[in-house]
Length: 238
Image (cartoon, rainbow, N blue to C red; front, side):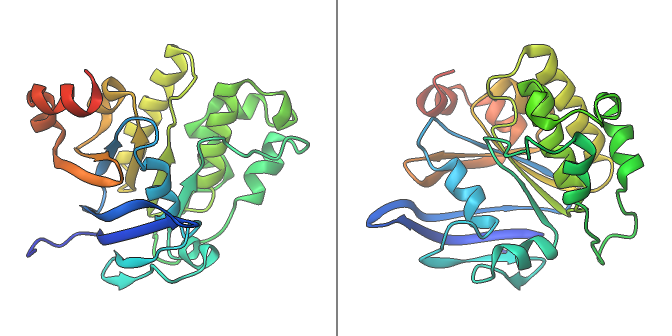
């Protein structure tokens, strides 16, 4: 394709033991855009994000970040290149304070002119500033989700991978996370969100890809998806 994509995934095949999960999966996104990766439970959304972060081995296919092949790199090298991953189960350090969790995630990104520091994260998440001395294990689910995102931002990522960020959260917290993502979009961070909450994605995404049984079955602008009621009903039961 002639267009210049910041992240381009080509024909990805991924297995768990002998079971194939992703089948020739391809998708792409441009710098500073937000891609919603949609699909039902078990469709392969989480596996896709883990593969991009280097946490799940790739059997074949390629992942190009700014035209650099990264599919065979270790997770820590992928992280150093600017990909930040927020897992579905948050994985905060429960016995450490909120601020200690944030400092654990801190690292430089030589490609970014403007770095995110602790004060900047607290600007994004004023609630976390108030909770900075509380152990992470004592936070609510929504507060832990915010902490997990904030900790990843401390690594100054160019690409932020969010796995089901709205799952199990109260609507008011989901609205807060949507506002955060909109603020991040102003910093030219590329965002990929694996989600089932289509209304959440309609509010924040630029374009969408639908994954079904490990393959991409739709990829277009979020506006085109909004109008495509047949595809919505078939793959997302909306």
